[in-house]
Length: 430
Image 1 (cartoon, rainbow, N blue to C red):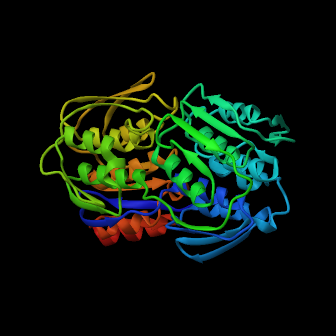
Image 2: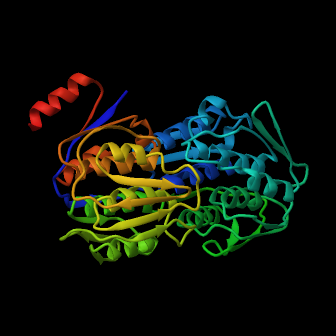
Image 3: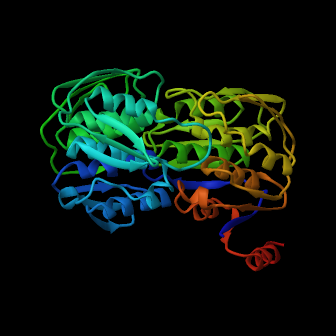
């Protein structure tokens, strides 16, 4: 099993380029099968979640042509099955988008209940509520969600809670439903807007994405398009936090600064300097960081996917900080791992109380999920000595060339596969 081995203590300095948003790309690639014409999707990240989804799309019969590392051409004309294999689905949660895409196009879909990171309960009841409102019959048998509709029609749907997945799934199905659909209490995340823009480029009629009310006028069919995925705000935020935690100076390129406002605000609060450009942000940490309080909220609030990275950064800040998680109830599994590195962090309910320390020390830690894994890498980069991060399979789900990008910023980090390679690294870095 691959792992990262890190010698910490180097401030990160330089430039890093951000790739396409994984969460947007997963939905967009799924929506690409909703037409019988070829669709070109550019700026997709080369990460395992994307690659597994493309395999699943190919398995049901779509023509998937990987033009290059970050570009794929998909044609859904040859799809021969609306039943998706569990082997793919158990690996990624976003597989549930195949429900909305297949239901919209074929009025029938069979998709196993999804997998992904275990960061807490993420029920799909709002997805199913939306499909039923659109006229579908939805049942769950033997772990498989089966949805079908003789007449998929528009509806007025009020989501009981803000859900990115449900908003996108319902939006996809409604795009090819008869009549008008209104989704109220819709998610406003940038990748929701990106998926709506993509569907519109295929001929859909979707208005209001980015607000809490989305209006969809169903169309009979969608057509070919070429589309580039929006930059990944979570990848960008991760490098912003890494710059802060290591007291570095990093220019993060190919971003949309507005999407990063909640992250930028907190980085400014803890004492970093942030400079914004049209498509880049620069984070510079010249002095010891100071404490702050953070609460995760749906966009435009502070993102739950940045909570572990923020917590790691606050372990090195002066004073006591409180991080409150309001989205997922099981997102502090990294706390014990940070304690092994010398952090003082106490979890009480949905909050973590963090007493800042001068230094972290390297240790053997294990990534419990995608974002917590990235946070532990940041901790290793900021710590004194050698850190080994196990179970990086989670990190590979969402970060492309993670170790290479950090090396380009001056970090001493390598991806290794066994203990012998760890020893070679130790000997090389002293």
